[in-house]
Length: 256
Image (cartoon, rainbow, N blue to C red):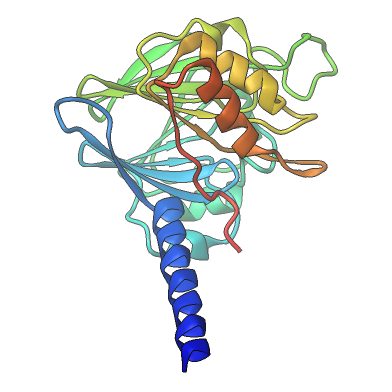
């Protein structure tokens, strides 16, 4: 009898922990400030996610099987950061974009699109700022260091983004090193920061960059590289050792 109770207890713990992790990693409501502004974050895969914020729906780098978006509302804004296939999928874009959607992308992405897509295409250059659907959108450079013509990501080709609405600022890094433009960011409430060698940063470099610009909260994303997944727990430990006031949230961007 005691053995059965112990087994039942273990099963219940596994079930509860499993549910908690699924909820925590799949969908998170975040209060990012004193005015109770909430941003709902739904990781899809790698660099792809859905943000629900200020009554609008934002997709980042929508790629892959459309079934991943079947439970999501239609996007008001879609952000594309770069031309690589883990960020740009013209077939998926064609399906997820609606006539109401604003597609924000760098010129290099626009140049690869072979046909007119639904919605409105807005091309942004590095450092450009625009107002779209109640959001201020700033295009932030994203590139590898040291700079070279043969780098995976060259300066000026792709965009990271800072979104602002309701006094809250969210940074989406795109594929980048810990560049000065990232380290000099100010007043970021939530930051999504990449870390996957050899394409972007090591966890150590990512942690140093985060400690430089000090967002209130940081979420690792785009953390699968040539040798598997980056150690996001190590990233969290490094950030919290350097500044325990920065909240590090680990979400599951690679669901089974």
